[in-house]
Image (cartoon, rainbow, N blue to C red; front, side, top):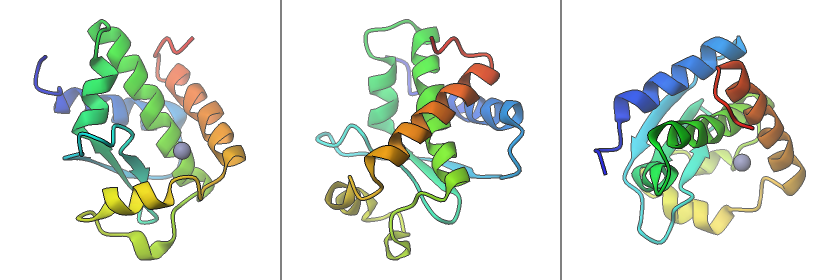
Length: 134
Ligand SMILES: [Zn+2]
């Protein structure tokens, strides 16, 4: 597998932000994940989105590069939606060094309905950016 295509992922992120014309400027940080936590993706209240290398690898796993990018566009769109909607883990959790542990403990606190909403918006942003999410 190629090396996570980090520049590509930042490009996808920019495309999503441009296409959705949201008045926000979140930052994307690619971080080391843990082998047992593939879903290490989170939006922080300061507008930073953390995406683990493992989540990236899983997105590209067993599919074409194009398909992998579509998955990532959707994942990033979902997290952008959380920033737009103000769905965050409690502020005390800001700080990236222990976030995975904290995230594992707190997953589920955001609530199912908000997750469904973020999925819908993430889908929309991805489609607007030209990713064939269907
Ligand atoms: Zn979510």
